[in-house]
Every structure is written in structure tokens, then in C-alpha cells.
Length: 168
Image (cartoon, rainbow, N blue to C red):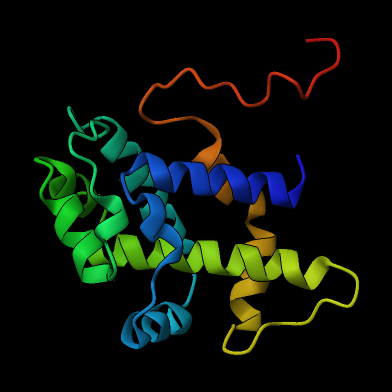
């Protein structure tokens, strides 16, 4: 699976958690700086993976009644939306993260995945404000990060790999 395909799958996982259009709309300077300053680590990745598994087991976590995700404009709003679903906050905390850390890690992972892809393109350069160490971390852990988005934790049957195997 290509890097761009893996990144696309991560974005699908973000949408599953109800962040929809807001997933790329971390527009506030404070939020943008917080995501850019975040340092990806082995420990953070392990906690994020566990929190994601925990969330997928929370009843109702994937229901999107009255989905207002397009109205989410800040990390604070995303955290409040996630915490409004009974069980989500506990699922994340039991993995050793706060909901805010979970959201910031998710955006950092996405940002650095996009930067890794951009750098890999002919003539690609590291975007301003992006940490080379985080891009390197993403590249080293690309398989693990892509695996987070591999399965739809909400059990949707959208098999987007159906056309990938000519024999399938």
C-alpha cells in the first residue's frame, strides 16, 4: 500500500470518530502551534493505538446523530465533542492520555504523514514549521500508524481495498 493510500486511510479513521470536515480545519494559531510543537514518541504512539482500540469498544462511539462536525473549529471543540459521548473520555484516559492529547497526537500524525508524503515527491521540501524529527518518526512507524486506520473501528463494511487485488 502506498504512503498516500495509507494517509487516506488514516483520514478515514479520523472521520469515523466524528471529526469530519474539522479534521483539516485546525485553523486557530494556538491550535496550529500546539500541533506543530507536539513531539511524536514511541510511548505516545502506543497510548494512541490503545486509546483507539478502547474507543472502538465504547457503545455508541460511532453513532453520528445530528453530526455537526463541520462546525468544529478548534481542538477544544473537538475534545468537547468527543467527551460528550459517554465512555470516550474514560476509554482514552485508560490508555494513559487525555482527550486533548489524543486529538493533538492524531493531528500531529496526520500533519507529519502529509509532510512525509510531500517530502517524498520530486522536488519536495519540508514545509515550514514541520519537525524533521517528527517526519522521520512517521516514516519509521508508517506501518503501525497506517494500521490504526486499516480497520473501520465502527464496523462499516466499506471495503475500499476491493479493487486493489486483480485476483480478488
